Image (tube, rainbow, N blue to C red):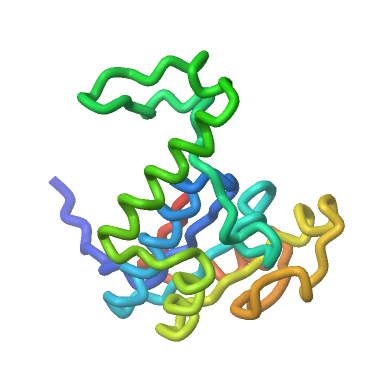
Length: 167
């Protein structure tokens, strides 16, 4: 049996492509945790994930209530997709989710980005998606280091102990 040497995690590249509250916070929590562990951290926001770093939308994200197979009602019962489409349901679920997050002292998106940046993490916007949605650097939160291509992202993935995480 061949033994392989374990290489400790040295760098994470976290890709956030969705704007649902739960997807964005998954990326932010993982990035912040990596920064706190001293792991080199880069977060790449693409397609609808750009809403998480766009000044106008970043603190107005919603919980996905339609087509979310993990959505549960109180008591753990599955949440019927049909209910998620009714007027006011998404807003109510989002409000409930944000209230629970506040109880856990989870900061709003803009503050989370500032924590990651202050800890040495780097935040990037996808050039293709930014061009597609006609967004410029000034549209993004000030912690966004740059607008980069996928090729630029892959170039940052060099070296041993690198993981790419897609949320």
